[in-house]
Every structure is written in structure tokens, then in C-alpha cells.
Length: 236
Image (cartoon, rainbow, N blue to C red; front, side, top):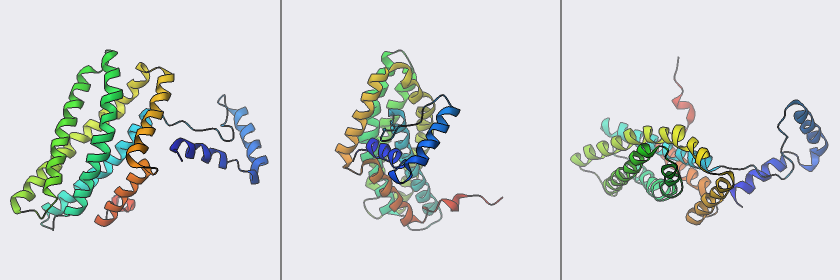
């Protein structure tokens, strides 16, 4: 089942037959209070291209946390977590670099440049994509086998360089580049692009798509003991 169909089904189930009367009344009340009509039963909730891309950035952010944990352990003199780091870099390679960034480079960046928007920013972003792929290659190579002392230092340097580059990279895309897409892409093409993104996602990653990738990231986090969100809450 496609992700948009799942979202649409969720909206429909919210007004299931067992509570149809009450739900209908609640919808009528909501419609009276606001100018925005409530979703009708079975109506799909659209997932826009910027939302797709920003959700994928969430995967990237979580792998950056995995990289940070690897750096912490290496700097503390602990054993290098080669398997989790290798798995995280593998997700960066297949999901971020070979899928997510290719979508940006094929469908997003050219439209902005053609419209005369953010050309300088796009140029930097493309260069960072290329540098990121070099760093990912180094990380994959370094974590494919036990690491010697010098290799540990190089691994930390490459992990840190990747984090330093991609935190501002994704932040600039989320706050500047993706919002600008609405200014240069007509609504009809916007909707078609959303379908193209989803089709490519499932072609590459199967029926589970994005959800399956998130599950893989969660498994790596659990293996490192950093899955529990509460551990990051400061004591004040």
C-alpha cells in the first residue's frame, strides 16, 4: 500500500462505522468554527515533495547521531563500533546519496536555477554532495575491517567532517531551498513530483520504503544504546 493511501486510510478510520454519527457531528462542528472544511471520509492526505525531502533529512539527522556516538567512543578509548558505523554509512550511501540527493539534483535544484533563484546556494549544495560521497566512501572503507590506531584518528576526522558539513547543509535546504520550491513549481507539477518521489522510493526500497529505512536506523541506535529518547533530556 502506498504511503499516501495509508495516510488517507488513517483519515477514514478516524470516522469508522462504529462512531460514524459522532464523528460526523464533530466534523460539522469543526466546519462551522473554521473556514477550512474537514477531510471527507476516505480522502487522502497529500504528502508534498518538501515534506518527503524533510522527512528523509530526519533519517540523515539520526545517522549523524550514530556518527557522534562513534566519535565519543573512539575518543574515550573504547572499541570502535565498526558494525554500527558501517551500517549507518551504508544508509547514507543508499538512501541519502544515491536516492535523496539524486532527487534534489534532478528535480529541485534545476528548477530553482532555471527560475533565477538560489543559484549560488545550489552550487555549494551540489559541491557538498560530492564531498559527502568521498567522506562516506572513506567511512565505509574504514569500518569494513578492524581499525588500526592511525585509522581510528582518520575515521574520527572523516565522521566529524561529515557532521560539520551536513548539519548546516540540511538546515539551509529545509529553511530556504525547499520553501522556494513552491515559488517556482506550479501546483499540478508539484503534485506530479510527489508521485514521482514516492514511486522512486518504492522502486528502490520496496513496499516498506521510508518506514523500512527508519526501522533500520532504529536497530542501529538500539545496538549502540542511544535509541531511548529520554536519555537526551537534560537534568535542570
